[in-house]
Amino acid sequence: MTVYIVRRVLLSVPVLWGVLTATFFAFRLVPGDPVSAMLFGRGTAADRLRVRQELGLDQPLLMQYWDFVKGAVHFDFGTSIVSRQTVWQEIVVRFPATLQLAVAAFVLATVIGLVAGAISALYHRRPLGLGLTALAVLGISLPGYWVGTMLALIFGVQLGWLPVAGTGGPNTIILPAVTLAIPISAYVTRLVRVSVLQEVGADYVRTAHAKGLGAGAVLFQHVLRNALIPVITVLGTTLASLLGGVVIVENVFNWPGLGTLAVSAASSRDFPVIEGLTFVIAVLVIGANLVVDILYALVDPRIRYP
Image (cartoon, rainbow, N blue to C red; front, side):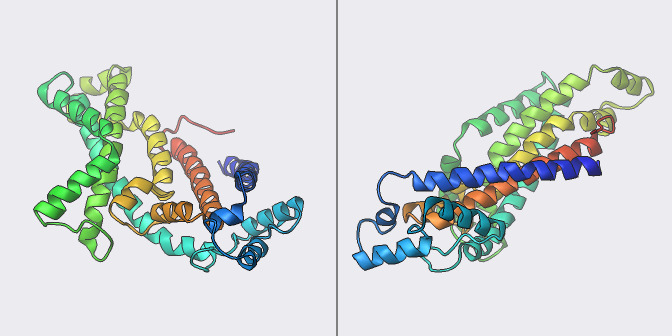
């Protein structure tokens, strides 16, 4: 396992290099003058020259590329054009808010999805199971911005139970976390249901029933563990996307995380911030995939990596 982890980490290096290279040239291939785009066509010639020098755009292309990669290795993506703070500082300040929201939504979605999926399989083709399946389909179908808006209108504006924007207390995270958790838990519910139904016909399940174990004990002690492998894949990649910043939900509830930072940077043409966010999200996705592969072996001892 140790050798596998080291090999995967080493293989991640060229992947990150590819992401950095694509990010670098995508920025340079933007039609028109990127400096004019950042300044929205305003500013004097001196302003444009200053921004060009700050970004290193007055250097040869290969020198720009080398400085960009070297800075990324040291987590140095330059300075934000808008806030005049370092890009890394902007990300570090916003990341805890996204982490808090992502973890809350992830835990809520995981618990609801596993329990609802297992119950749906246990009561297969019965009213309770059919009802949970229908709710899961509904949860997947509803767009996040609509769910967030409706929750804000009902529980924030009309009932006045919860705040609808910003941070400031434990209750401020409820609406955005629930909004994020609804489609994830719905998808996990359907996935757990299908995985469990595929396992219930196995020989070990019949043996467990023959030993006198009840349906619930067989389901939660034996079947569910073997059905978790595809679920782990979904949860791992979902957590990575949540940590990367859920743009729509964060902006609906004015949550000060990476999602709102990305929208603000894109609207203000703050390309250094966009480049830094791209790198951070790539690292999170690669790290999540590595954790998923390790969890495979922990959940199912039959899996062995060479």
